[in-house]
Image (cartoon, rainbow over all chains, first blue to last red; front, top):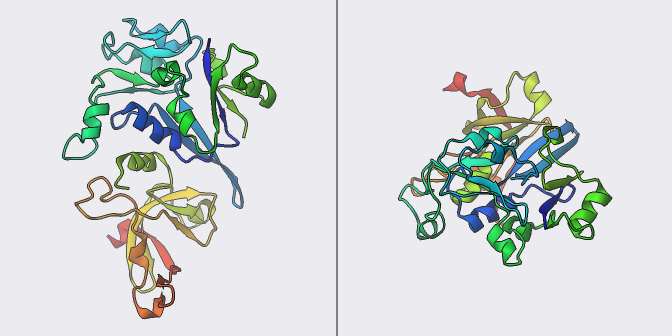
Length: 201
Length: 118
């Protein structure tokens, strides 16, 4: 099994639903986004198109972050290809953040609460479990995936722009979409071989 | 946005807390992206904000995102972010419709660099 995701840029409307559902699922502190949306404009008035690019950890086949980690905290799961971090081993050197060509790793050194009054009960329950001064990143909602559910961003995408599945299986929907619609990855020149594919808008 | 997650999304979004203006029109008037400007109506009502140059808007219009520009200290996340568009609207019977309780939302404005009006 090699889990991967396909993001259909033709369907994405840039609503930030993935970013918000990810916040809710993972309880990430302020400034940490496992999933986010990048926006850009193309063309000139009145022929303009806004391009939405939802980005997340690409769970590369050859992850430069894992190669850069001096303690072995960043690793790739053998059984499902998910790139993950063992926070007990992370010393917060941030080498992986410099190595990642997609800048999808975040260092958790900001305040852990949003409101000036301190942590809300929700934040105590969800954000309080995160270790501080370690690097955080998307892990494809591994707990959900192991329980048979899709990642939160996939489950909550209102336009069904995201599809999650097994890239090793040639009959899975992700493999079919990549083949039929010409799926591409970001920064193929880096040789990282990402597991997150995009379909052209 | 008082919801912190929405506030984060709005801060990552290039348009939410800015005043959208047609790019070529703005350059013609000597404005640059991210410039602090003051938008003043004919009757002297004015708001301040930062410009976002975009191709996706008519040259004779400005784009404000609603729900922004809160000033209450009871809304610590939303306070002081974005532009309070309603400040530009006239609030009298000349500009209100008693039938559907709506205000006239069309305002003729003038954009000026904020430094010159302090």
